[in-house]
Length: 152
Image (cartoon, rainbow, N blue to C red; front, side, top):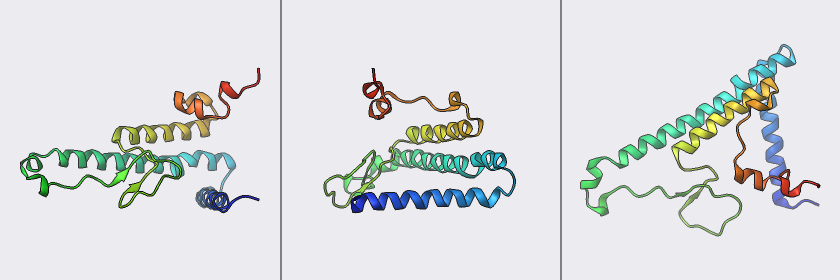
């Protein structure tokens, strides 16, 4: 039988799928093709926009931190560094007073995710694999379909 953690992950996935189906059905009274074409506007586009907004906020915050006022301040009065560790996946040891995020910390990486989401949306609508984003080498190694696992 699956462990408690596996069951929780499975339940989260079921809820996510149900939410996506609900969003798609709200706007797609017409044909199945109409629902698919709305996927870019209803799911991929808004998610990409959220990533872009987060990237903009991170860029603006970096500019604020570089302001000359902060360089003039004594170290004891400068803003504290953001207590978040980015690119953290899976279970890690106990980290007190720090947030953990699987997301990248840089604005550039967030913009790349937004761009890839839009490409996934266009690929989904067109059913054309050439619209999909390029797969990075690290992702290829981690993928169970990599050449390493392929049958000779």
